[in-house]
Image 1 (spheres, one colour):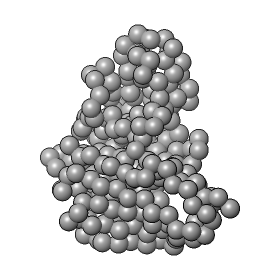
Image 2: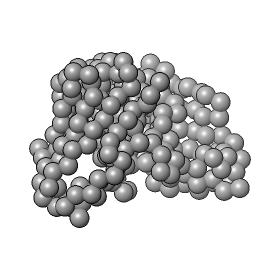
Image 3: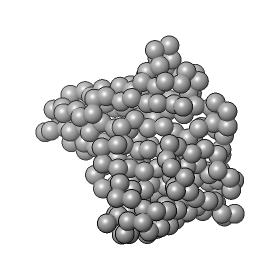
Length: 115
Length: 114
């Protein structure tokens, strides 16, 4: 069974540009979560999608957005990139949605560098 | 919203010793508490989890305890080995409203020296 896959592995962008990160969940998983892992800050929650809808978002500005497609894959868009957006962006997937507690399976992440 | 505090941020032990990592959470409604291990350059992986209707759970050398009254939970690793060296993250999830995603602590870097 394929795990959670993320692309690209690395992404270098210039300040002010837009970045698009992609995630394919494990087959059968309907929930996709996005986290930002910056040095020393742990895993900060960005967005949660389930069944094509945004269920919850963390304390990030609106320039962080995304969507989930009918096949449950997801993309994260970051507009007007700032230097402090440089981080590892992790996607995770799980079974079910609200009210269901399952562990997450993480992808290997996309390393975004803003110069 | 939920907030998770984790300590210590770094922990160094000798091989064979025990290691304890503690976390506190803010939302009394939170009911799911997993622990993840992230080795250098790798993705976080679930190592154990506990739900609010259970006070303790063990899996070989790893155990997790939960104190709902005090709103804290802990990870215990016994007979530590060098391969236990990694960053460990605790997390909590609240079912309030539509439910929330897991909120993570800032992580504990565990170093086990032989």
